[in-house]
Image 1 (cartoon, rainbow, N blue to C red):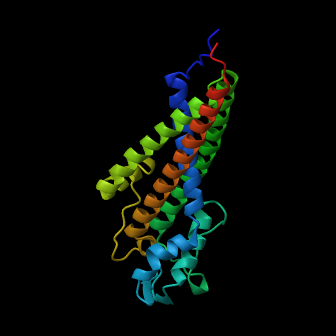
Image 2: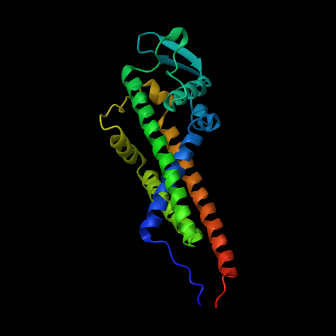
Image 3: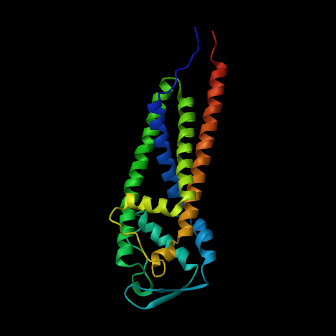
Length: 235
């Protein structure tokens, strides 16, 4: 009797790949977004040693560029629902305008949805893997799904690398159709804390991290498939 192994269907592979990509990319986002070392390396060195900002209620605030790391820490904590409020200047004065604060509140809501969707995607990955294991093609599903997920992210990353600004705007129009994300770089304190180079750098790191993860997972799955094939009798 032949030791032939059945293959996972295309729909199951596609489902696994999409769920794996979503869970993996979101996981990378939540790993890199609060990382102060990454933020410092991308933003701080290119800023002047002393920064002067105009506050929405009037007046100015002068601080060293290292204060940007603190503002990032507090802002990300709010966006990730780890803090109830955005950072403020000394005396409690608002740093961000009402429109900027509204955008951060929208981002916070989107992140809550994205987090829940990532948990659901993780459960889909586990359920798909359990289904495949019972049918004897777990390694092949994981290998093919991880490769497909990596290719998907490579395509998206290539689009961002070639046309970052239009892709970034398209992303925002998709998730924030009300359009409250367009600010003047010359006056926006939000864009001071999060300049374009930060988004380019963090996007690159998230993409590379996920592709590396997918390559490792696919490699381990391929190795497992070879080992399983070696012990399957041919007759």
